[in-house]
Length: 322
Image (cartoon, rainbow, N blue to C red; front, side, top):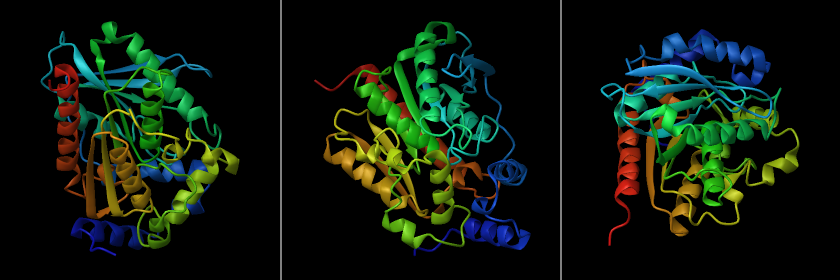
């Protein structure tokens, strides 16, 4: 295995010394409480943004909570490009609060709008509830673009981990005309194949916060019916074609059971003609972007990926070269 960043080594030592049980040893409500309790120690103070509003989108099971951010330095009247952001947490953990810092950082780095989605979580709401909420949120944002001062021709979808899974599916549904089309997909250590057969599942089995066993716990809760895992709405790597999908940024980490499938998705996108920026961090772990208080590289990585999304928006605005 590649060497770990010193910040990661120190974090893992702190976790080991605390005696905190792994998520998979806890009931979902206990795991959520543990995940929330770690925020103060792991996340930096929130950045100021120009505007922050809580909204709701109509969904099949009732209103879907959203949070809108407009990046620092943006004018109140400006019509901004928008990133619909789906939080990580294995479809079981996470909410608007858990990824508030990530969304603030991205909004300001991009000088754009970010709309975060508080989709329904498993096991209370298994597949495809989260996906349907994410789709409803995207439809709402596109329909309300004028009121929200968003440019509907420059919509991007993105997320981390389970949220990146949802974003990848939304991007393909947009390509197919079933949803508003995205001009970019931001996939941060994505889950794209629920078969759990990637080689990194065999490599990353202990010593980090998210292991192969952790992912099995999440996937079992999200898709209790194993046959659902083969549908491309759950495993976008299994889609018949990725051609025509929007340009993608795919971030992977070596010390992550999802590493190999994320890299396989990036390679396949590229083979099928989709512009791809693939960023691999050999010394990092799954989830590091929400650990900026203890893993210093999280902030500059978020700034960098934000700049790449900006470039995708710029290309969408100017059109292809003649």
